[in-house]
Length: 570
Ligand SMILES: Cc1cc2nc3c(=O)[nH]c(=O)nc-3n(C[C@H](O)[C@H](O)[C@H](O)COP(=O)(O)OP(=O)(O)OC[C@H]3O[C@@H](n4cnc5c(N)ncnc54)[C@H](O)[C@@H]3O)c2cc1C
Image (cartoon, rainbow, N blue to C red; front, side):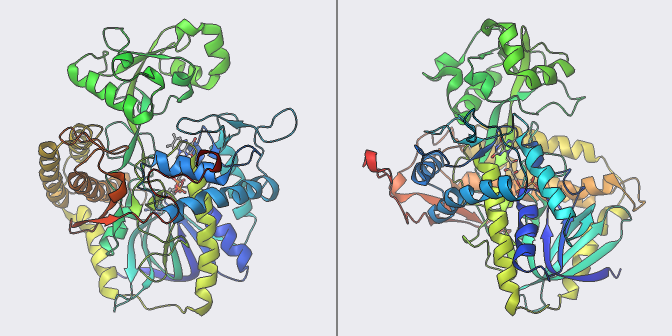
């Protein structure tokens, strides 16, 4: 099958905060360039940047400092973040928030004196989270999308990237192969620079928060093209996902952290509090501690009718709860729960992947011409992401990538793709259209069970090796399984098959990295290795498609464990 073809100087995969910022910055740097944003959904309407509720961390206040934001990020990440990436994050977040307000038109909440309001978020030593009520992501995405629409930037909507294609000698990237989801046709876009910004997304877990368009396609493509992923064992779980039964997509969606912050109680199926037995801060302990305690209670069988736990707010006064958590009260009511006065069933839910493609502070990767930004990248957050550092990450590094790509292509020509790689990718994608049809839903359920039970909040060697065997079996079974409907246009079963293939490949990387880290750190907890290793010799995992995991030492380029950049504390 011969794909259609076109050229674009710069090709951006993904239209979240990272992808759109990259497009705007590249266009500003060189308006004459042909820039294309390709996205699995509709531009501005998909991905997780739109779902940001809490807000954006940035050191704006006079009493705060980039050093303080940096130290919170490094300590929160348990000394695993790449310090140059973290430094870039905290320093450039200030520029980005001013750009969002003053150039792109975002309105953020303000104090009576006109300064930007910044609220408290867990794990931070200062109230530095900029927000627009609890709909910050919608404000950011709407303004970014408008600005992209207003410029000469090409859009390929409902185009799914399926393979990164190198040159025949493998020295650089030549372009990307897509499926046009509206027709089912293949399209090859040749590009001088490509940005991977498809947003990761741990949707291989039974309960998860990210949008359904995110199925780790970018990470799976990166593995296949030979890149290494770092910190893949680090998957963050949010303690309070709504649990409303299997019939609704609302299950897994987040009930915000502020509920516990305000004094909400978590109760077992026996309707008694259990958190005080696990941590002195009880429900206000960090996300990883609370999620672990909840999972332990669930394993003991102390569960609600749907197999989770309860959150209870009524003791704070139903009126106060209705006033302070209007959105959450309404979300719960939609699912038949009374948050203000009754009990709501909750479960820990997979929220964010700290791991991703290894990259440098200018967003380059080891493959010339390929750049990465946002949740597809690894190394900014280490073992834990602070709430509010996710959207800062995608916008900061999206902008850096746009600037870098515009600079890079000044001396770069279009390169010829490896035709055999295109043919092989098409053959892989075509497989389910000719294989005997099977039950994809059953395969998905097995993936959910495996990742949730064995590679989730609590891990140990035996479970991880069982998971690996099960993932190998799932991969083989998926390869033999076809889809019933073989029409090409908007064939959601076909795309489901491709989603599952990406998820299984990346699940394997998570499992192998989790097996290699024989200690407990941040989001990664090993029941058989419960202690944090020595911080001085911290190392991160780097994994390749063949499953080889290398432990690489973290370079403490700015501060060493036990030290601080804060003058008053030194
Ligand atoms: C419910 C929720 C609440 C959150 N709240 C906060 C918060 O308060 N503060 C914070 O800092 N962070 C928060 N986060 C995290 C934050 O949303 C992400 O870290 C960040 O927005 C990711 O940006 P991104 O551009 O990398 O990816 P996304 O915004 O997710 O965009 C990814 C894009 O890639 C596209 N894509 C995927 N696969 C393909 C493919 N194969 N081909 C083409 N396109 C593809 C998608 O359609 C999408 O357009 C939250 C996340 C969730 C899920």
